Amino acid sequence: MAYKALLLDGVDAICGEIFKQRGFEVTQAQKMPVEELEEIIGDYDTMVVRSATKVTDSLLAKANKMRVVGRAGVGVDNIDLDAATRLGILVMNTPDGNTISTAEHTCGMILALSRNIPAAVSSLKEGRWDRKKYLGTEVHGKTLGIVGLGKIGSNVAARMKSFGMHVVGYDPYTTHERAAEMGVEMMELENVLGAADYLTVHTPLTDQTRDLVSLKNKEKIKPGIFLVNCARGGIYNEGDLGKLIEDGTVGAVALDVYSEEPPEGELAELLKHPSVICTPHLGASTQEAQGKVAEQIASQIADAFEQKGYQGSLNGKSIALSTNKEVQPFLQLAEKFGRFLSQIAPKHTDELSITFSGDCAKHSQVVTDSLLSGFMKGSVDDVVNLINARYHAETRGLKISETISKESQTFSDLITVDLGSKADYRKLSATPFGDNDYRIVVIDGFSIEIHLEGEIILYRNIDKPGMLAATSGALAERNINIASLSLGRDVKDNQAITAFAVDTNLDQKDIAHISQIDGVHVVKYVSM
Image (cartoon, rainbow, N blue to C red; front, side, top):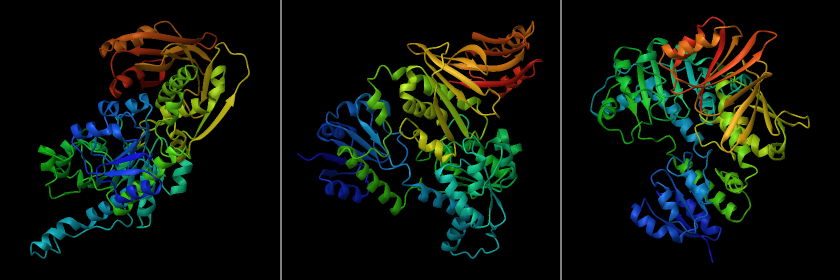
């Protein structure tokens, strides 16, 4: 009996053709009402969606035969990945299918801004001949700033360099070596904002990227900058853009994505501004891209059913290991450890040296994948997990070395990571203590215990009387409550490493307040 595939959201017809060639029975439809979809979903072995259909926990619970859910595109925000994993359903996407289309759309937006193309078209269609009004600017010789140098950002750089633009970039996860290969001058984020005539963003929306351009940081921005966003709504503060245009901070804006889609209210009014050009989330909307992702997802799913391969799988290893009680603690430790390391590592870290000892060494490859998934999260505009973490690390030029140690250790299972000579905290070790209890136990030779949870302040200090009182007092002045404390000391050299767990999120002013204490240095804030 043939497997049955349900194709929704108007996925390109080539998807159904590929499935039929591979022996599947195919039902193709536009978006279905939830009630109707829940009634029929139990009949299907696989389904393919784009962004419209929400694949929820409750829907998957009714999908009794479902083995694979495919997303014909990159983002899987509309698929409950945890629920699918729990139910043993494989989830796949096509992360490379729309790279070229989105990069080309970005480049088109840059040129449209430069030459006032949308306004000029509208004017001429209305019977006017406004040549002087729409005097443009050349992109040749101008500086393009790119925030995020992954697949799409690097493709934008290559294309706009051919127009004679000087390209500068910021991406803490891309090495200087990789940037040099792309012909991109790496800078700190503030320097990019100050140097760029044009700015385009190709990052996920995170606490670090939200409101990248806003009234609060207008002084850092080169006056008259042209902004492009084909990544995620909210990276530029949409509520501030109109004011930034009016005061001359921003020359013009091109938007393809919005914090609310379709835009309504004040956001919809912003789009009417003459210095704003906008498109309805068309970055991936080309015939080639839609055909490519539809063909790819059908082939990937068919390969999975035939056990030929699992390309594009987002949770394959998670499913395989979900019942392995021996491996799970190490995966959870490594993912948390990776998230911690990503927040203290130097920008442009180009190598991670990982050493395993004890039972975790038996599963070193997958444990490294888990550590990398934690390390890369927040830097990649895609789901990052055990399957694709190495791919994203390699794309950023990050080299990984893995060693298994036979030396006797204080702890029976230990993961040690060396962040390199440029790191303020170079060599850290972590171990599981028990159920959901994961701790860093050594930093640069200092014995310490840091629970990998909550909000953590880490710093080096002179080991002398009054230091704890000074820092705890500084926290009290900021109304920050201390939850726990750990201290590692070198009595001989009068040096210490101190870690506080606190009850609230901190901002840069809080960190600066602590950094100003005499004898305290290299303050790091980690949010788990």
